[in-house]
Length: 381
Image (cartoon, rainbow, N blue to C red; front, top):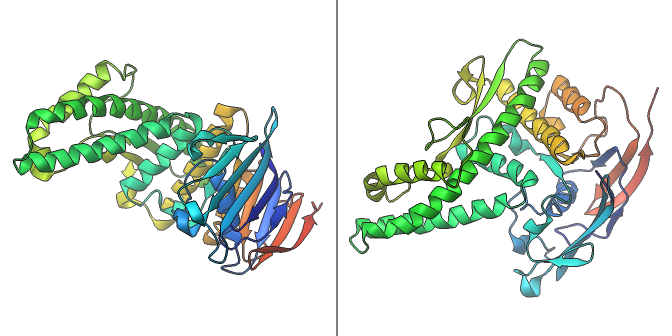
């Protein structure tokens, strides 16, 4: 899979961007605050996923403009498709999104069309960051290969909010404990489904990431990635998420009802689960060095790309947003070697990026939100 054309105007500071990226390597250079990351973000929005920078809708349109528009065309193994994404300040909540000329109701309807994997400096915190960061990473990964998954997660979050509000109301004597049952049944069904898909994905992640980590550590260290559930002592072999698993989930909720009422919060469930990483048997969160954390994060993101390739029979587009500058030379070369053969977008301040082998590609210079110059990058013998 690769992007054939990208146009953007009025998205943040981007002005009349119209480029035809190379099928392999695309380097976007410029000083800070010139629009390099905005360009990567524009591509990412066309996947249907929320901004990786958590940009609010009101901040997506240039302060001096009334609207913004992104148009992106891409090819996979079967056909070429086009996404148009526009917004207006007059009705900021209305997103006008078209796939091949047909309007889609929500951005999530784009899931599974344009597949990208984005690497940002913040991603280097996956290993040592909060469990919430790892849950978000897992949920994004699953949603890329299971189109209805994001909707299930959103529904689960809404029900958790209702249940937590009800717990507080019960504690203050305004509601009855019996009112919990309707919410608990729904949570049990949705939570079991989420648990099963997260666990299944984690197994695939472990398969790829452990091999990659062995390579990056030159065989000196062994990485193991697992899924920790606050509900299920064991997930291996479980399949009946609508029956047996939902009943087990429901029992846990009922068992913890009194504690939940006292705390005003649902203490157990997929919203409290975690993905665990161990190096040579030791939990990374507690014992890994800064270098080990970065290596774990890198192999997880690379594994995400490989799983996408395996599941969709198409390699994803790789977006590297100022990540290489955060890595030492060995890790830079490792990442570049593992994404060879995929279309890559790289943002940087320095044109002299260390590659083991230079590739065919294009070099773009960005200044003030505009592409000032572009030239071909030829392979050297």
